[in-house]
Each structure stands twice: as structure tokens, then as C-alpha cells.
Image (tube, rainbow, N blue to C red; front, top):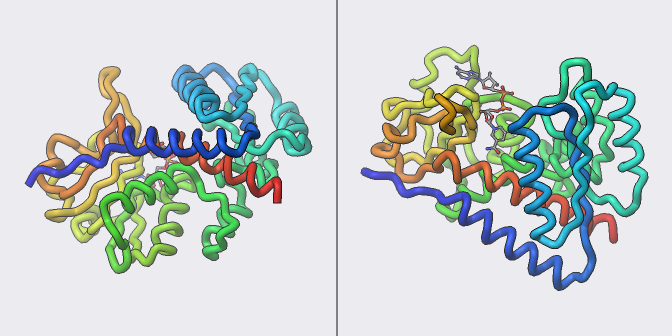
Amino acid sequence: MVANLIKGKEIALALREKLAQEIAAHGDRPHLAVILVGDDEASLIYDRNKQKAAIDAGMDCDLHHLSEQTSEEEVLALIQQLNEDKNIHGVMVQLPLPKHIDARKVLDHIRPEKDVDGFTPQNAGLLSVKDERAIVSATPAGILYLLKTVHQSLAGMHAVIIGRSNIVGKPLAALLLNNDCTVTVVHSKTRNLPELTRQADILVAACGCPKMVKADWVKDGATVIDVGINRIDGKLCGDVDFDDVINKAAYITPVPGGVGPMTIAMLLENTYQAYKQSKV
Ligand code: NAD
């Protein structure tokens, strides 16, 4: 068996075009503010891509690029100012933050209605009780969207998620539970990992371990979603050994061009939702 590719890049582009049409028809411009602290090269490229994607979709987007030395108080003050600005609909802070800044404190300071990354406890809580007001974290939301392009219904499927982070593993587990999957979350302390992953109808790798998932970890005909973004000798790769697993899975996302582009598309979707909610 050779797996079919789930082409996140194309799917994300189509979503962004549809969003651009909706925004143009609406005639107003949703406004996103992105905060980046420090000079991490990858984060800067990523945030510039987000800004370009937002502008292409017909939004306004400010990139607040602050120096590495910026204090926690200064970041909190900027968030406060953006929280109070009626013309700003979405606020997001690029992670990781420099070590002297408490990321949890900073994220918690974003008004839940403007938290387009869905990282505040309020949005995480709304998601876990399946309340549709939740702003769902962009990467899990993008993964669900990709899964729905290849499966009409997820009901009863066994999803195994490798990784339990607050930004990917946990919200994805809640989202898949809400979509009637049977969910197993495995992590760095899990015993007999391959034994569990081999039971997965849907296997999501989000652990940041380059090419860790091999063909013998995968059930025949499974759907494999690779969230990992790693570099080996400067070359991007995921947490799944793509060349090995492609002969075992039925569907697989590539890296790059799979989950990554969906994250940006869903962030824009979330900003548009936040904008519409602000007008209600
Ligand atoms: P994280 O470091 O916060 O969490 C990693 C999780 O994986 C932890 O829960 C840990 O217990 C688990 N883990 C680590 N090593 C493991 C092992 N050997 N076996 C089993 N579990 C293990 O990472 P994160 O922020 O959730 O990101 C995970 C990966 O996804 C990273 O490569 C990151 O770059 C990528 N990512 C991609 C996107 C995207 O848009 N494509 C978005 C977010 C994160």
C-alpha cells in the first residue's frame, strides 16, 4: 500500500481564498496583532508569513517585534493596550518567549474573546465542555479539518496522539473526543509506545522527535498526521519517518506542506470569527 497524501498546503490555500472572498464581501477589515519577543530567526519568518497571509486575506495585521530585553511588564502592558483597543480583534503571542518572561502569565493576560490561538484557560475550558463559543487552538483545528477531508465521520475511530502539550496534544484530544473518537494520549513517560500506536486508526505525532514513528508503529491503513517540525542537517522533517510509513498508512500528511499551512489558515479563521463575534 502506498498512502495518499493529505495535501495541507492546497487545502489551506483554498480555505484562505474562501476566507478572503467572505471578508471582501463583508467590506470591513478584521485586525490581528502578533507579538514577537526576541530575534529567533524561525519565529520571525513564521510571523512574517502569518502577517502576509492575513493581509492577503483582506485583514490588517501588525507585527509587534520587541527586543529580547523586553520585560514581562512591558509585554503585559502591550497586551493590555491591545485588549482595550476596539479596533483589534485578535491578539497572539509567538512562543517560545525568552526565559525571563512567564509564558503562562502572558498568555493568560489576553482577553479570551481576542485569544485567536485558543491558549487561554477560558478557551481550553470551553473546548473541553464542548461549548461552541470556544476559540479552538489553530493547529488542532487544522488537524481536525484535514481529517474531515478524508473521513466522512470520525465516530468510533481510535485516535492515538503522541504528545500532551497544552498547545497541540491536549486540545486535540478534547477536539477528537468531541468528534466521537476514542482517544489515547501517549507521551514521554508512556510504556510500550509502539504497542499503543499500532492500535490507532488515526495516529497523530506531535512530540518533536525527528522521524520517530516507523512503519512497524503503524496499523495497516491508518491515517497518519505529522505535526512535528524538526531539522536534520538543515532539512525540514516531521516526527514520522515519512519514507517508511508511506508504505503502511492509507493517508499521510507531508512535512513541510501538511499541518503547518493549516495552522496559519485556522489562525486567520479564528481571527475572522473573533471579529464577527465582536460585532454581535
Ligand atoms: P512540546 O515539547 O511542548 O511537547 C512535546 C510532547 O511530546 C510532550 O508532551 C512530551 O511528553 C512528548 N514527547 C517527547 N518526547 C517523546 C517521546 N520520545 N515519546 C513520546 N512522547 C514524547 O511540543 P509541542 O509544542 O506540542 O510541539 C510538538 C511538535 O510539533 C514540535 O516539533 C513542534 O515544532 C511541532 N508543532 C508544529 C506546529 C505546526 O503548525 N505544524 C504547531 C505546533 C507545534
